[in-house]
Length: 406
Image (cartoon, rainbow, N blue to C red; front, side, top):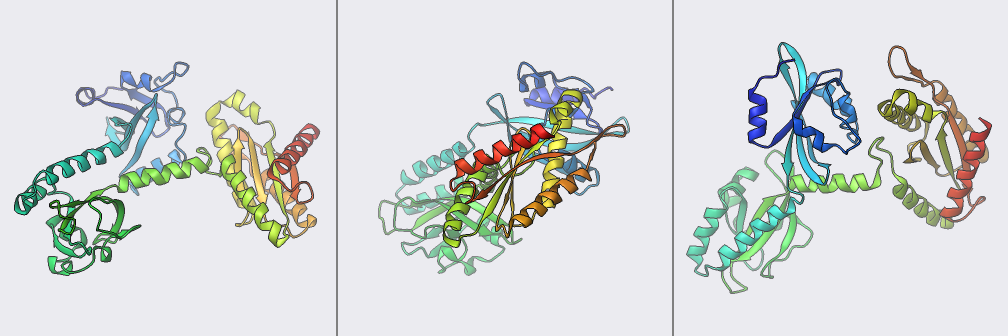
């Protein structure tokens, strides 16, 4: 395939890397420096499956389908880490020689985006504090914050002035703000204004009812603590989203989206504390996939990953909404069956999972059908133990005993 020369030239000029691949996920073209994104044991080449490169991105197939059907115009992946560097990725559909292809463009970002906010804060504080004359300070404030939402408050937190960005954000007139407490428009974890500087996270809904997060600096116009102050709001919705995603990632398996081991142990500890009071019982069900290694060895890791995501879907469909599913790693999963009514109920729950699994093979391609079967190991609180270590150990041992029999 011939790629237009302008793309490599532009990408090289602006330090942007790219991969082009087709609708079957086969790599068509890429910039030479893409190899540096990989570890020494991996190779990027034409006709390879691009999903091996985007290995940590769950649901890539579904997201690309949304682009093809025009439900989305593009896919944005923020701060993907490669070799201790961070990249933002914009993935779009494009036409080349009358064919449809995807192009993923990588732009390098700072390791710590919060440094940008710190820089803004420092500039604002230094410039405003160096000008104690109110009129000069106001002019400076208007000059450096034309595009930032900002407003004046008195020592009681009442709004005395707003800039045009604030008016536009809310879709209101200036008269709507004057004399109102700033908390009428900005929600905060702490509503104070007597301190000289208050670093705070504010949130507000704009005229389109979209919730936006701000990092707010409250800076006095002069040295008098009772003087008016300027509140400068920097949009950090992007960073709050990353923070939320990082929190989610710390508690969930990146491949399947299920809870990870740390999340599981936390839930078991909470359940033990609850059951000590309520005298309820619950079961920890260890699940191991039979013949999973053979799938990885014969079809490769991508097939193995697809199979693991398929297993996660099977488990979700086979348990109650209140039950808890976790992936420990590899091919080991755990189902936490809460409010166990009886041993008969437990037997039925396990039988249901086995039945669903046996009827839910993964159709990997036209020639390959991957059958599903489980090995189980179950421990019951409080009969098999009253602490997390004992319960997990008993379930693990029983699971391996079942695996030897299968």
